[in-house]
Amino acid sequence: MALSIDNNKRIRILGQDEIQYLYEQPKFTDDERKWYFELDNNEQELLILPLTMVTKVDLIIQLGYFKAKHQFFKFKLNDVKADVDFILIKYFNNKNFDKISIGREGRRKNQHRILDILGYQAFNKPKHNELLLKKSSIISSISNDPVFIFRELLDFIYTKKITLPGYTTLQDIISDSLSLEQQRIDQILEKQLLPEEKQLFLDLFQRQEGLYAVTLLKKQPKNFKPKAVYQEIDDYQNYLLLYQIAKRLLPKLEISKNSIVYYNGCGSFRTTQVYSS
Image (cartoon, rainbow, N blue to C red; front, side, top):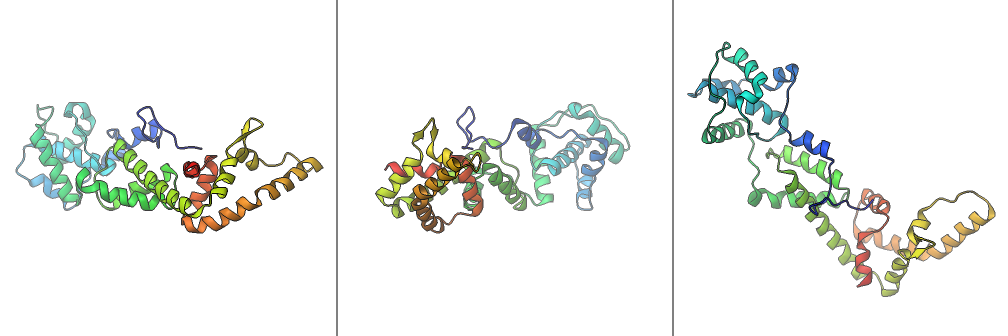
């Protein structure tokens, strides 16, 4: 279960359907419109701002979309006609207008109004990248599973009331945090492992009978016949020293049980890079 890399050499975390679910423009059902376009007492103040009706309609739609996805979308009003019609009936006595969109400046001001009223701040790389990398690095010490890190990072972003960064931005942050965690572990192993101990681990990744020794070691015995039992005894005797080394090292690595399980499932521990140094 090695880390998967997509075509542009970024770490692959989510499937295309999951990415689309997070980032595509909402398509509300009738019940969802009632929920997301409902204005609370503070939001009702938006209706009395000295703005044109088309600007207010755009504002309410953007607000509803933001509540659903924590990000802003660019759209023309005639492309979201069902949402426009709902808002016109609910808030403007079903009046109509001719414009299909508002200008760039009007849209930008609406976005700032939404951020202000909801207490959010727009994601800004110079301002927020370091914050998210620090949090991602903490999560990486708990689990090296990119999906787990992604989900925990999303929760952190929502808690901090930051607009949702782009997917590639989050890919890069998580990749950087995993690299930093890898460097930390490599440095500990380099310091703690003797040359002969490094060689013992390297031997695990040499091919035997078409498979790596570590792969054979992880296989369950086929049965309890004498040959299989003797093989288990041989494995115990051959790898007892490795077990003792691992038992000594693991507390020094300060990684969680989840990370240990994840590395075990990877089939090859990325930190073996240090063994050949």
